[in-house]
Length: 226
Ligand SMILES: C[S@@+](CC[C@H](N)C(=O)[O-])C[C@H]1O[C@@H](n2cnc3c(N)ncnc32)[C@H](O)[C@@H]1O
Image 1 (cartoon, rainbow, N blue to C red):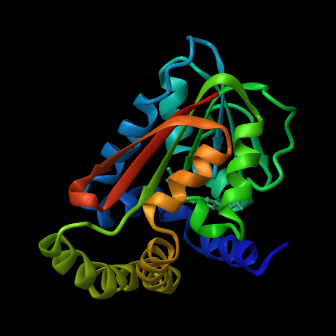
Image 2 (spheres, rainbow, N blue to C red):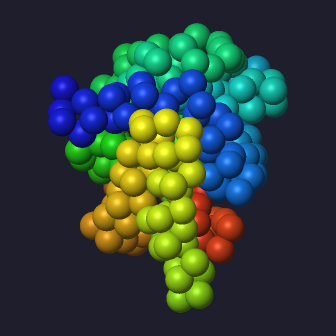
């Protein structure tokens, strides 16, 4: 297992019990709205099988199930999967090596995942492999706001306020909040949007669409497997 995956497992094991409400608190209640936008991109027929990758405590999986899909959840962290309420089968597995046959799912969602993998382009190929041609692949990720004024508010908030709020909850949340601020900026600096959309297209998805939300603090990306 890579150092990055080990780090992700340790990080999420420490914050699993508070994950659902802390996500909403730290994002000023925006995070549920971002997930709703993600889930709305899935347009598979009622009762279709959908795979939710990096499912965590199952917030996206439950929203998919509420729309009438049969959902399978996978996540690297057993603690995250166990902390949530199930929406269907839950499997501890890595996004880089999915334990599923080719083209077995009508659609696939993933949330806040690619910052935690060593090779995001190869991981995109692996995610697409299990989706039937014509199926939607949709993701949600944090983003660095594009306008100068929004960045001027976002930087001090993520760098100083989030760790302060985290420290009130637990040492694990304080260090997660510190990590997040750095991780989001480093990821977007290393991999600008154009490069990321290239991963999607090279994996066989097209056309690829994006929607920036909350002044660019999050981005939903989706497209159909060709
Ligand atoms: C921020 S949580 C997202 C949880 C949930 N989907 C949501 O909407 O909030 C990111 C999840 O990615 C998982 N993860 C990190 N690296 C992974 C990998 N390589 N394969 C599968 N899951 C991974 C973590 O365990 C964690 O539960």
